[in-house]
Every structure is written in structure tokens, then in C-alpha cells.
Length: 184
View 1: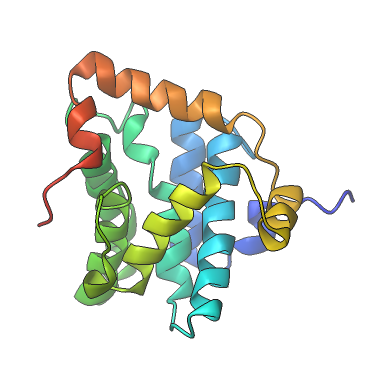
View 2 (view 1 turned 180 degrees about the vertical axis):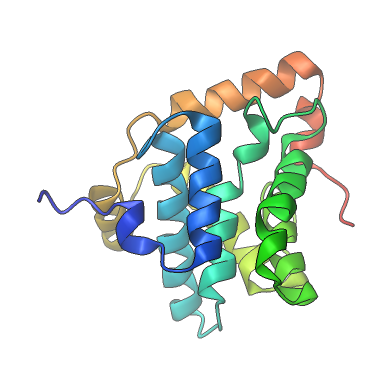
């Protein structure tokens, strides 16, 4: 093995497996750029939580990380802001697991608000750390621990895949809404 971390090594719960399966269904691939992006976000968020001594709900974080951009794919995209479509999709995927309302809300808020321009600590650790992790992962990995995450979960294809989602949103006329979705 080359040291690459796969989703199968990270997912543990039925909800996490369902989120991964939905992402793979939408992207049409296993181990693709968006799947790896989600894994990196989860790993980055775990590191950020540890550094800030914050409690992080692992299952909420991993499900949100895997599904945070899923609303931008055909089959989930309805022509609105893709983050709102992603929220709706995640709610459908996770409903069968009977999460308590606060846990589900944190996961859904994390997805819908991951491009929000201001901090989201008041909505929950997972909401803010997904927002931060996404911003971090879209930049070159400059520090040692970020480089190590990028080595374990390669970034290849990320910008091309994000470009496709942005292009789809731009064609639908929803691009300005992506980054400034009003909080619920």
C-alpha cells in the first residue's frame, strides 16, 4: 500500500456509509476528487478541533464533509444555491438514521454555510470547522501537517471538480448566492 487513505478506512457508521454512497452515486466514481476533498476536510477539521480543544462530533463532521458539495451535481442540483440543494440532499440521506434534531441541524448548517463569509461558532463546532477546513483545503498545503494530509489523501483533480460545480451554478444564475446564503 502507498499510504493513501481511502474512505473505506475512515467511514465507520451506517450514516457515514450512506453519505459516502450518495456522493459516489452523484459523482459516478469511487475515490474521486470530491470524495478525497471530503476526507481531507474531515481530517483538517479534526486537527483544528484538537488544536482549539473543541469537542467535535465525528459522525456529523464526516457526513457533512462528504456531502458539503453534493448539491452541485446533477441529481441533486435543482437550480438554487448548490449549498441549499446540498442541505436538502443531506437531510434526505440522513433522515433514516434518527439523529437528534440538534445533531442533524449542525450537519445541515455546516453544508449550507460552508461558504459563508463570517464565522459560525454560534451554530456549532462542526459548522465553523467545515467552513474553515474548506477554505484551507482550497489553498496550497503550506504547513507540515497540511502537507501530510495532502500526501495521505491526494488533491489531484480538486480544482477541475470545483470548477465544474461553479460553472453549473453560474449557468443557472445562482453563483452570487453560493457564497452569501442567508442563515436560516
